Amino acid sequence: MCAVFDSRRAEFRSPLGAVPTGGTVTMTARPESYRFPLRGFLCAHFEPDGPRIELPMTHLGHSINCEEFQVEFPCGDTPGLWFYSFRFENDGGSFWYGARRGHTGGPAMFYGADYPPEFQLTVFKDDPQNHQREWLGEGVVYQIFPDRFSKGGEIAKYSRLNERIIHSDWSEEPLWRPEQFEGAMQMTNRDFFGGTLTGIRSRLDYLESLGVTTIYLNPIFESFSNHHYDTADYTSIDPSLGSEEDFRELCRSAHERGMHIILDGVFNHTGSDSIYFNRRGHYPEPGAYQSTDSKWSSWYEFTSWPNVYSCWWGIVTLPQTRDDDPSFRDFIAGGSESVVRRWLNAGADGWRLDVADELSDDFIRGIASAAHKEKDSAIVIGEVWEDASNKISYGARRKYLLGGALDGVTGYPFRSAVLAYLGGGDASEFEDALSDILENYPMHALLCSLNILGTHDTPRILTALGAPSEFWQGGREKRSEAALSDTRYFAARTLVKLGALLQYSFIGAPCVYYGDEAGMQGGEDPFNRRTFPWGGEDRELTGWYRRLGALRRSESALTRGTLRFVAADGAVLCYLRECANSQPVYAAVNRASASQTLTGLPDGSYIDLMGSGLYTVCERSVTLPAGAALLLVRK
Image 1: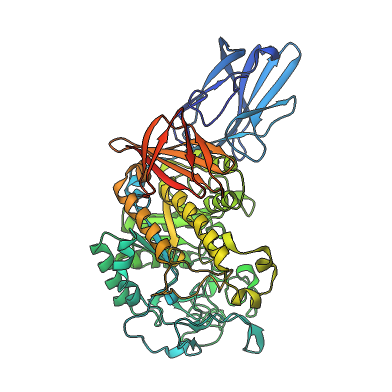
Image 2: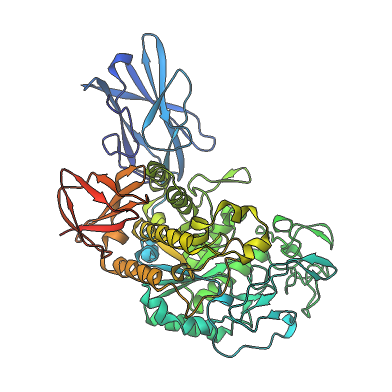
């Protein structure tokens, strides 16, 4: 039986993927002859409120038990999403084909007389400047939680922020128990280990050896907490991390090595203990909590001033900002001295926007405009946990990737697909999940998005893949003390190697959470934020990451190539990366504990760039060893 339609195959849809405004897409459908289709229609509507249209399809004739219909679909000049399906008529009435439930692309399904789930077509506004920011996907990103990475340099006195708890031993456990603070038992996140910006600069040789080209820093601005997501002053580096000159020197040193620096922009909320809100009175000028006449009072929304106000997820220490307030907008992304432009001018190369779902599209566009005005090549990435092309947040379809807003996003769908596959899922589910992303995102957004296995908001990848079920069912005290047994550690390490190979060979920018390459373990916050184990790294795992980083530099197919799945069945996953002027590379993975057969490669001899040896493909088949993670090229 022939396929009726598949949005991921050029014989049915051309061009594939997201398309720029003003383009035309050719749709070809081949309903089965035994259904006696006489007339065909492409049924589409423009999201969110566009009228449904039906475009008649031309009947091209008979083809292998199918009737072939075709239509030219004009995408229009407005960026947005089209949703479409196919309706055919015969003497008995109408019947429909649409997308599989839970997917926006791929092969069509027959739905009889029922209106089907629809396919998605992303139409974006192209801009030549988009390609100036694709440097992110050409290298390796390394995420650093600054307090926990490396010590170094002189530390300023804490002055107003003198309630901090300072660990004397770098290897101590972060504090995780609630403590009595200001009349209540609460998690304060006020323990510090002494990592600094100068300490990061002292480790640039190490990062360069990993092939790192971009350092993404968790927040570095003055704050009460160790995570710095409760900003106290957007214009000052936190004294525990160093000075503005330390930041500028880090940027200069990184740039000399061809590295970039991305900052974390936390603009949805500030800290309650901040210049702007000043709930605890630590700052001399009245904040919004102290006076309705404060110059910052319009930044916040009070239900009953001063003690009842909007805050992020109900956390009173994180009062939420009003991103529609003109003075707040101007402060964050207005003139040359605005926060966004000031720190780009100081040496940063881009911003990662915290909780982008809770920032308005208009505010995000303002941030992007300010960043790109300061530096054409500055990148703006948004924290988005789902498919960013069709995300609905607070009842509205978001326009992150349609042009003029985000350059890319955090790739949590990639992480979910990798964990599901390595955790025992079928490789076909990996292909399905990420094919939707590949189809829905513009190519420049794919190249500017992060492929992650772990972040400061997730358990460590080793723990996620290796911990037994009782680890997750136990309390925080149990998780604070737990470490993987040797048997579980080595099994999980094998899976991490597989995940890292997928991360480095897939379209996008591999983003390594500090210490994952060293074998760090840990569950949720703060156990995923322990200090880097200098001198105690897993050298084999670090070497694996170094090899992958080197191959990202030498094999342009891994950074610029197209991606085509070759096999995705059971434990075996294989895809091809290829581009002009570079040898094609096959990424081949077997997550099983026994050897498996991979089918689909052209016959011949292949060498594994990861160093495992030679492989011979005969009759398009080759045996993959247990736990294989290969990058194969023709010998």
